[in-house]
Image (cartoon, rainbow, N blue to C red; front, side, top):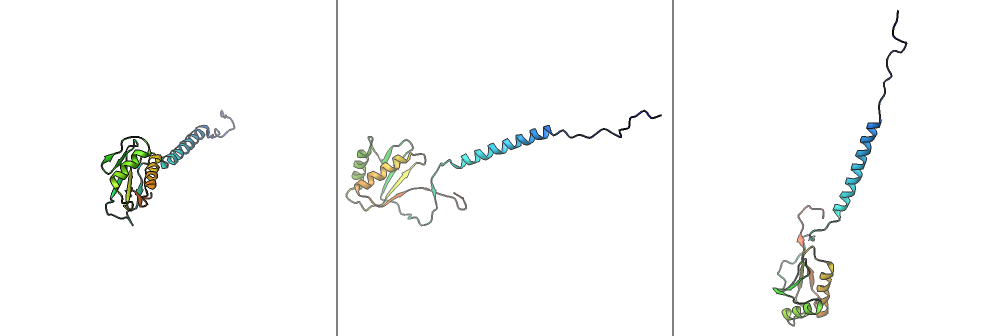
Length: 143
């Protein structure tokens, strides 16, 4: 006498709901991390340039701009706001020689307007040999 029914075994079944949950979690992880990678490429901390074709002689006149927007001509701090006190300090330090090379050394976090203000003041005074100091990039860097 047979007690078991005619089925030879239970049907094997794969539950796919946990698999779908895991795949959706991985998909969200990869989408979010790829978005963060794009945003991190936009951050600029230091200006860099190659060290080739650079004149290594010390410039005769240096204008420094800190991250707070304060101007220094040589070792003198420019007192006052706006372009006129900056022009007066540059003229006092440079004298009558307008052919002197001028280097603008601005902090990387300085607003562009401060650099443009310095360039405008130099242009109004007749300086034509302007350069902007940068940090040399490491060899092999992709930036």
